[in-house]
Length: 382
Length: 187
Image (cartoon, rainbow over all chains, first blue to last red; front, side, top):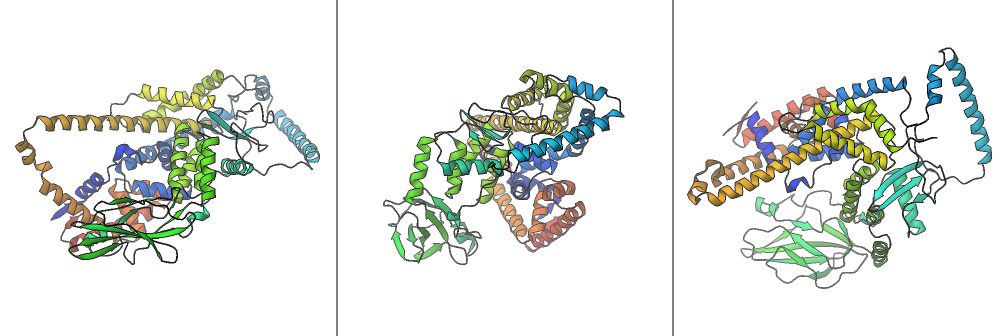
């Protein structure tokens, strides 16, 4: 058999055409940022990993990359033009016009006077605010083009440093650390929301410790056995205490049995012989505990197990009752706040649920870097 | 600070960057899809309006408008592709309803043995790919997706010579592995 490079490319691209109406594809904003080469390392890794397997996103990345240099030059040209023009945000621009109409020799003198005023102002402000507790929020000072937002309950004129449309709410965090647009949060939840809006990062939940698979379940055995694998739950924290187990079929298997073990490898429970590739536990498992499970298939009188060493164990953890209650309570009190629920899910290690919430948040804030980063962050944790 | 009304800021931004916005759309948009620039521009303007309406801070207007224009264009590309795929599926379904069974069986592109052969080939290529070191595998996969070495370098954060080197070495490895599997692969 002979294969040319074009045939190989065509074959590869046919095999990596996105399916499922591109539901799992990268956002166009992410691809544009990738084209500009302006993604953080974690995001970049995610994009590379996806583009390797998606010819549609690869093509769109190429479209964005093709204009990278032109766009950078055009943006610089515009910046140069702007430097000699009034800013676009102010309705009363007469002082700007006055500034630009000054003779050139006067500009340094005025600039020096302005700088001196700034220094004096800074000392006055430092003295006045020495004993005040100021929230430690690391943010860039808004530029002249920023449009401050002040809600009725927030400090007037305090610039907004983060803002998201969340359902019918407009959640905003100002530079004073005041959060508006969301009620019914406990102090701990308020801190969590503020921290997420400020750092735009989500920490990996401690509950996910010990659940990393560190490899694929398809690591060993014959070709046939490689296709026979546990699917879910694997490496997850679960909200339910009656998990549903899923696995891929083994050809000609006559029955399957699921076995669930605790952390000390004691058999907790086993299913009856099954003819399907899914099984929901009829009874509850102990909350807060870590479990490992395997599926045994009968084929031609033999027993085949997945995952089979050296593949790692398929582990999952059940959420504690207290945490499950907290999430149920939050669902009732914060209702449709995707941000709050997403953060609570992520904190609990429920990454699939968190991703769904952040995806909804990102859809409502399609151009927001905050919403995008939170979504990418939680995806990177999976 | 005195803040201009929404309309004033919107108009001022478009007066300053309107041409840049349209130029971005024209440059990003593929010419073979029959997309209307005006429609994409309208969408981009709407996105800008919404951003200003939601009091979004725009620190770097040129960069922000570039992203709005580029994302609006990519979204338009996705919409038209999806529309075409749906049309193809609908046409295909109605064709199959009308075609006699023997015609489907004799269609060489839909023949099960051809499909099986293709899948077998894909499996061998994937197996060859799986044996490559990580960097080479990434480089070759992106190359096969049609990316140039410059595009690969920008995406992965390598220099262009490094990307070129990894593609070259990776393809050499793939060729050897495919040869061992009975496939002659010529560049």
